[in-house]
Length: 114
Length: 112
Image 1 (tube, one colour):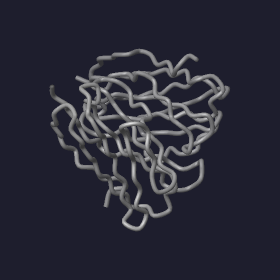
Image 2 (cartoon, chains in turn purple, yellow):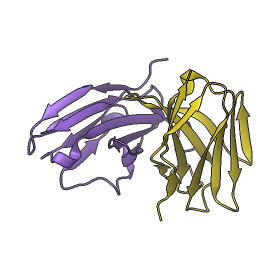
Image 3 (spheres, rainbow over the protein chains, first blue to last red):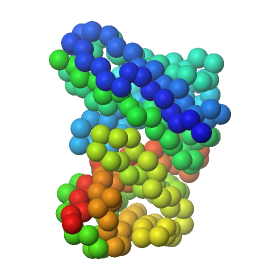
């Protein structure tokens, strides 16, 4: 079974630039999550989709971050404009139904903002 | 108070040692709990789920104390390959639509 795919794996940008991350969850998984993991901390949920609807985006900085999951499959997370404090690993995860199920994580995108 | 608190360590133990990590959580409504393992520069992977008082899987034992809102992970006969960061994970409610809170992780290094 193919795992969660993410791209790019690494990205270096300057502050105030824009960046987008892509995620393809495990086939058939209804729930998709985007997490931000800053060095030395645990993952922090940014947004959670159930199929193509947003379940929880309370911790998403909506002035600069946006995400969508068209057709309930792939998802993109965008940052515009980026700030220095956005430097982190952005992890995408999926689960069959909801948080009671195992979450399978992708390899992450390591973002560095200069 | 944070939703999930863990001792970040690091814990440095010799091969064959027994080591235990603790985790406390603030939401008494949480029903199921998880331990995830994260290797250096890798993604987290599920290690164990804890639904009732505890769970055992080989050398790993997870225990839950709902009264004290406390979860532990015990690793017996430590192997070099156990070196990783162990993340305590707690949902904010019992339903499937809740959010997971991750602790900052406890770093374990097993030395030969």
